[in-house]
Length: 399
Ligand code: SAH
Picture 1 (cartoon, rainbow, N blue to C red):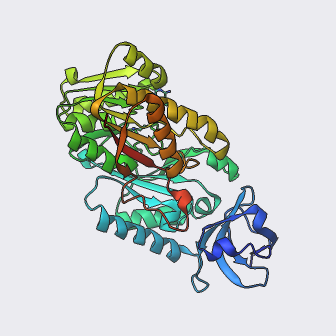
Picture 2: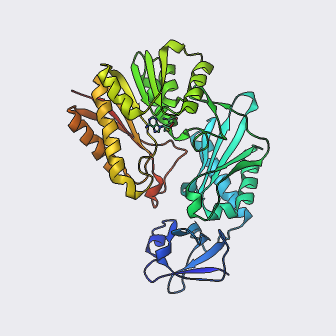
Picture 3: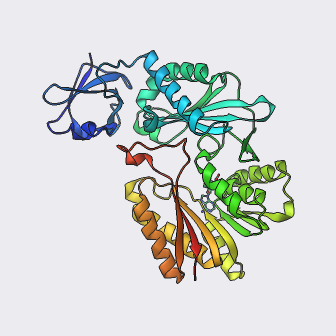
């Protein structure tokens, strides 16, 4: 039996149910566990703590499968975890066409993301990201459990993520089961049709996490002039158009994303005159719009992760402040700013401080209407606050 023994006192975080074991906490490993193989984790005094997936190359040396000594890690284990995750989505977000079925640690499957896209022409596609050695090791069992629990025969892998390198795993994409995905799958969200390119789009093709926030925009947009920064394939723009926005300017630096966004607008029958798509840099365009004398009723800022790791926090904070200041200055009195950060390294409190600083420097009164987060299909373990990456603030200019 492969065993990982912790240094004295290093069992504390496991006892608080945190699912990661850092390399620095490990005293020694007995046996020769392969990459991703299951190890029994023991305290210095020999007490059982957990069963975990061994990751010899990573600073996160093991990820917990179970804290229950009576629970073996086998095919039945993964079947149960997948079924539980599915039952939760069926109860909480029933009938949702684009849904996150598995959200890593929050579903007891550290390192695994699975999204499901259903839609027109019988489309039904699972898209997976295997981001840690443990889920990679159990890939076949997980794919079998997923296809049998969902009844969806098509599984595509998008394990082309940088974190795999730290796990000693190569980047990989391709069909794991069923048919090759269509070049653009047509799915639906809140009454809007979206094309999703699961093979070449970001993440699994679509930012499913913003579903609830896109619906809020839809509900607020009637008659408004909207600016959507970092629009990708048009998520918030289409929501605003659907909600009756007067005019929407959308900015992104990816021509490919914009092409799909424009195609999405067309697929929903929105008049082309209500939407303007700009292939440009947001930082520069925010300044240019001010010089043009433009102003807006609603602005969305949903940038990429500015702080991919803790070393980037200072520079990222400056970038967040910069765009938020510029956006607040472009808001009409009473106008709304919807501002997001998906940097795990910047927590909600820090993000709020940064935006408050931006408002102060812009010389505007900003009122916080509501804090925003990802949807119910992206829960967070209380013992694992690292799982909360998406933070949003819904603000109103009150001066
Ligand atoms: N809000 C989107 C997701 C945004 S993802 C949705 O709901 O679907 C972030 C986007 O920012 C990507 O499409 C990327 O191409 C774009 N991007 C990154 N840096 C940029 C920059 N400096 N200027 C404009 N767009 C940028």
